[in-house]
Length: 506
Image 1 (cartoon, one colour):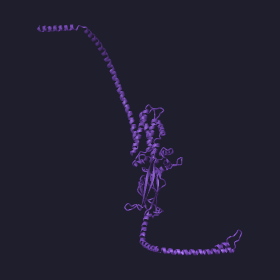
Image 2: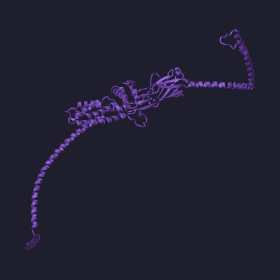
Image 3: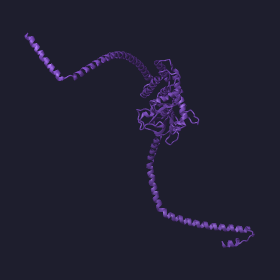
Image 4: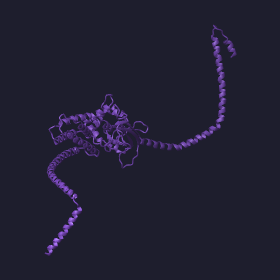
């Protein structure tokens, strides 16, 4: 390389590199590469020989081990194939069950739509033949199932359990509604849901507003409760829904650990469990091919609505009823006629109001009788107000008791206590007549006693004169000599005895 450097190196700036110089460089590089390749080849050959010498013994042992492993593989392979078949059968027996709902929280009156989906064991969609479609058994801790669509089902609507068959894609749908609303038709339930879907000023529906509130006293509920009150008075299906709830609220279906505060909502958890089976035949042995849980909640807004808004909000209604009752009062009517008129009007005002509506009407009527004001009142207005007010108050208590006990409220209490008021008034009049008769007799007796008293007074005056004469005589006697009188008396007795002897002797 030194010679190459002398010939090609040591150049100054501006000196040309000629072709000969370049060719000498290439030749020198070729010679260098050949030298390096020879050295590498020699080193590699020696290294390989040394490695072969070192591995000759271990490789022989390794070949023996491999032969042993191959023998064992020949023995294990059939067992692995058998296990694969069993695993394949097992994975095809079990299915992945998914339960879904559009949201977790609902208001009473709404229905939770439950979606059922069956997937393969690997989580991929699974198609089923028509005759091999599995059945899904649904159980819930609270609420009632309602079928939807054209799915095959077993079990009655409104039960806590339901068996439904999936379609060819492994899907099915079912709805869950709240407890204790039996008796509503499909149209009536739809009417309730439509009312809960009414949009309020803030663009939220009534149902959404009820779920968003932390307590029943929240300000946004004022508009919602107002709409619900209007719906009770105008929508028969919604009125029936609230009336069914009143004597049978959901919390009565199970033990209650503490009473519900009127301002607080009560949420009911419904825990669902689903099990997949091949058939719905209870006589054949079957096992669950899959299971899944799900939980949804229902908010009881009806109790707070009734307690905080519907029943207490009677001021305007009471004023209106007081005006109607006042117009029915005629000054010329006696008490009996006035009571009968107002009772008939009261019965008319209680008609077709619904269970909770009648209780509200009773309360408004009771307040109306207290406010009753008539421009030209009859003399018995106060007595009339008290009689009808008490009858309405007792009628309300009897109405609540009848509804709570499962009986249908009627106007029996109103009739009984208005009739009692009339009976008391008539008895009072009869008693008054008896008292007047007795007073007249007493006056006559008093006149006779007065005349007798006059005679006694005359006799008293005569006795007084005689007493005065006797007092005078006694005074004269006191002035006499008592000893002298006794002596003269003794003498008179002696004389009397002498006379008597002479008469006997003669």
